[in-house]
Image 1: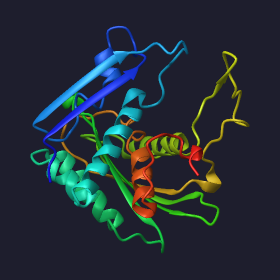
Image 2 (image 1 turned 135 degrees about the horizontal axis):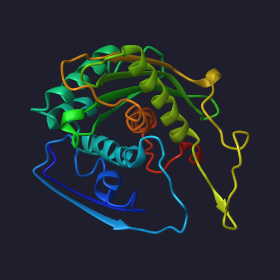
Image 3 (image 1 turned 90 degrees about the vertical axis):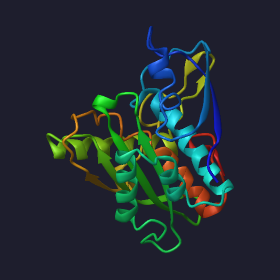
Amino acid sequence: GNIVSLISKLAAPAMGVGYQTEFSLAGFLDMPYSIPNTEVRFVDFNTQVPTGYLRGVNMSHNFFFVESFLDELAHAASVDPLEFRLNHVRGNGRATAVLERVAELANWGNPNIAGAAHGIALFDYTAHDNARTVVAHIAELSIGSSREVIIHKVYCVVDCGLAVNPDIVRAQIEGGTIFGLTAVLYGEITIRGGAVEQSNFHDYRLVELRNAPDVEVEIINTRNFPSGVGEYGVPGIMPAVTNAIFSLTGERIRKLPISKHT
């Protein structure tokens, strides 16, 4: 019922000179889970398409892979996804605290909306232990009559050490969550004839106020070193959404955005 070994393989453009390990492998080299045997392989793959820094950098798509696969392993082991994560973060007090608190906040497994389901994800970038932020997301969603995903509410608990300005912390986590929702639902750049097809927000869809869910953020304020929040609201929301879709429909989303799926 527990993970014995995990091999991760990533092919992607290396991000930044001298930072290939930190940026390109963020989320794979420093998973918060206790796994006895791990191996990470990286291939610097030149796509010929210029790349830049998305909010969350490589942590965003890497944590989508990690947290989606953790969910698959939980179901393969017939263990509740929350319990499975807690089993694998034993000894990691900060990760345990945010997972347990977000589960309480959302009443895990018992959505407020009839016909809805929950999905959970953990973000814990342990590479920076002195300036470390831990975030847990739970997405509550349902599927509409036209097979569209309706996200009703997102619960989020964050431990960023000493929260010097809690309002700014909440705003950044809310903003990162909405940014991540755009990525998971609609975010796609297409290239034709060597040029990007999208030119502005009329042909690159965003999550708008009218379809943005309520995002409830709770801060676990500690005396730990204050750490960042600007990017760390992004990674967890994407797998939280797709894990909820699996819980509701039995369909596993492994490629984003979900607008590509029927």
